[in-house]
Length: 320
Image 1: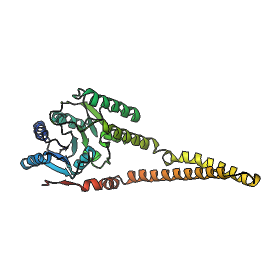
Image 2: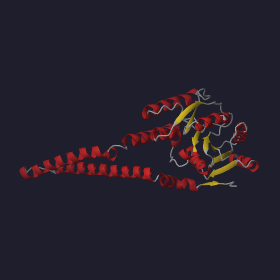
Image 3: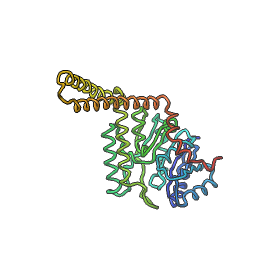
Image 4: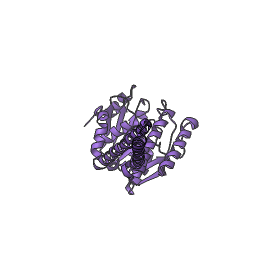
């Protein structure tokens, strides 16, 4: 299988059939074998029924059902798990991405890139609620990470399967996948893609998701900026508190020996606090180091463990 097209859907009953037709039309012009992996992310409308109808008439359609709405990151992850293509292309299910761009993206992968990112250079969205927050978020990601991704929110992307199938994801981390993989050494490029206004339904994204992206970005920056420091940066701070602990302990002993009538309760309390802080920071550093090493040495096991609960609630319902 050459290409797996993975599309998560959540309450997109009106969009799923037109998008299927657009994919079939675009792929008929390309010399690749392909499958369409439709992930139903716990939809409450007729999205799954419409998808099953498509699968009954086209063996290239594969349906993955999540038992409840987990969000796009888990939906993509479940789709990756069941995809069998050499290349994996992702899209949104709202008809705003154009399948005609798939050919150009796969051609870039064949040039040797690991990831090809879409860039909505002429975006058809509302300025205040969608375009402006997106511009701010993209600027923030570029500034914090130093990776020049122009459009982190664009859903149409192409990956080499071996790069993305076993990559851990959580929260809203699918948005930061290009940055994470680039920091890990993957080669990526960006191309201009078409963008269409939404025809049916309403957007599932809003300002409420921004804080999740910011938290994920902070976590990402912390890991990649601290992994080379002793005990992930906790070691230096623990050393400072440790030195202060010994100074405070020496002062307490001097008070006890030479100033027998003075109270040393305060000094002993400060000493105990400094000692506890130092030991706690060392403990955090050791735990961080063990987690990082475990992720490096056994990333596949970490991947399966982290997502076993979500994936246990997904099933391929039209396996052939």
